[in-house]
Image 1: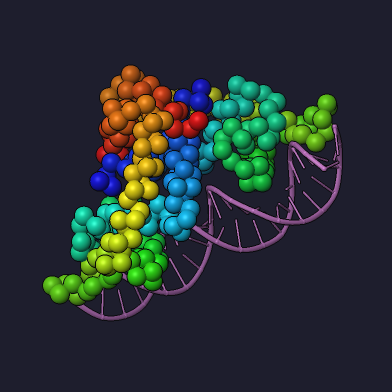
Image 2: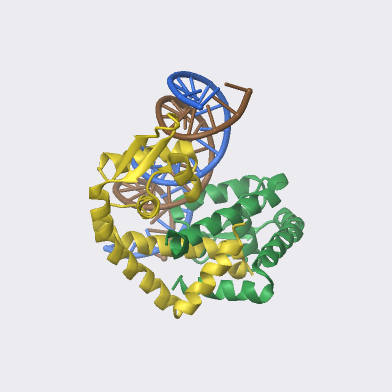
Length: 136
Length: 136
DNA sequence: TATTGTTATACTCTATAACTATA
DNA sequence: TATAGTTATAGAGTATAACAATA
């Protein structure tokens, strides 16, 4: 009954996956959100701060401290836009890129473990597809 | 890249589904966890407090306040076990059962909306199956 | 000694309103 | 007036340690 409630299953699965993520990245002092920011920026340099927040489902007010942390570690840089002095464009620093390269194999191994649990890449793709349908 | 990370997709989907749950139950002043407790107890009267907490992935220390709230509303009752005086056995009260009956159609409609988004009951069952595999 | 429920506490996450500087 | 970033703050949710009662 409860066992097959979609919301309940989503919560349990998310908890399990985040816990596994944190174990994999334990030595790196990095939260899932920090990794997500680095990964997102690496393919989209110069995104507005509010665009990154929006993309990750974080409110802009709460995103400030996250960027502060990454900037404090020297992984990310804020640059005021020339065309609109209100916006902060975000870039990964050289150190941020290097760090991300260290993280990628750990992340790949993490995803591989999840794929193994799911039964294969086909099942993973199915899952991603179904999860996306819940978000529109 | 980021878009297809399992953990990221899980988080976004869970956020969306919980938000929809809260909208559906807005008039009922009930959190997802409260509903989960009522639903779980309705099929398993007399479970130990710690068993319910464990089943829902909540630490027993944090579960105390949740039971306090439900007991304060008269929906759930603590009864000291006769065979082991340490344990609190949990039961839904008469009022709790009646209340749950009011909630069930709202919950059913909520699940129906999710099924519609997923594309059908077959897809929902697939999703549940995949999510369970992530939790072992 | 170990376990159940409990309290206290701290830390993270999330939500909201208001401010600033720009547009 | 409206928008991007920021600050402050309050509320959830979560994690940990310690205690009382009981086994």
